[in-house]
Length: 394
Image (cartoon, rainbow, N blue to C red; front, side, top):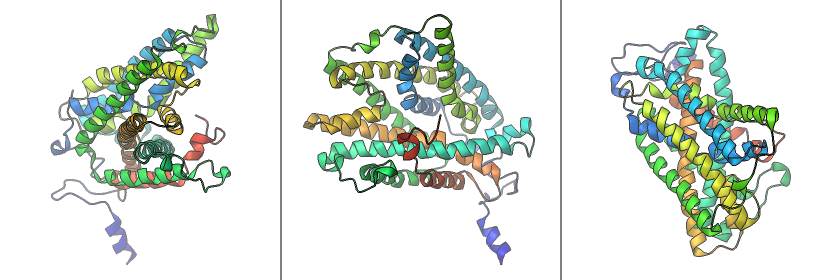
């Protein structure tokens, strides 16, 4: 009886398959067959634009300026780090696009069959945490969208949760609404995700440039922050620049390391190169510079520095809003929502699901792994990692 149930829980196998589900192999771990290699250069460009226009690149200026760098020096660090990221992405993705194998299988080549579980397990654990954090920001995107649509009655929704929970009612409601929107996306296999990425790419790009144009026009210039001089000098400046580069590189390390998980779906061996080398570099650098400009300009408007776009839009909604402000925050929130949905798929649920599939291939495939990662991401109450500094140190 128990054996019968175990057999039913095994991952499905394709008809006429030339593989079997074992503790080392399943459909998602074998070299990707030709009919599943659907990703073109446009898909990989969309992937990297979505990965580049996010809060990591948007807020990197705050970290670098806090280390005593000037804006020009900070952008120099960003450009240098981005070129390293692009180089590593091309290198890490090469085996995937030419041998059609993912990180989980390739890691066995250097760590051994059993030792390969260790790096994979590390990525799964961090993937669970980052999945929760990105879902939290997805909830903030829902909050902004509904705040623009419904107005003050949603923005100022009565809080019924104790302060010790580190979250308010509106945040929890928005978080679970995001989860409801996101979960159906887990049913879409990686080879069919190009169109959603292209849509997210267009929407988040429009948000970035829309907020940039609005901020510069409303403030009638870039503000004073842009003219900040470096406060560190000599060796201190040099080491702070290295530290900033290391921190920024680490933020993209997981996605870069697992490039082969995605490049194995490339339609041609070189389909990923434009996205990795060009789109990634441009997206990250433009986002970092725009983040500095937007923060500098809005500081002139609101008298405070709002590096994070979610916090900036939430602050705008806390003020008396005109119809134009409501419409603006609604569309900005909608673009951020599309971006967070794509990020949760690209860098968290599906990627970590690919890793989880290697831990128990007989019973876990990408889809099941992604669902497990999502459930854990919810269970860890991710708002504690964002709103309480002592919970988790990055």
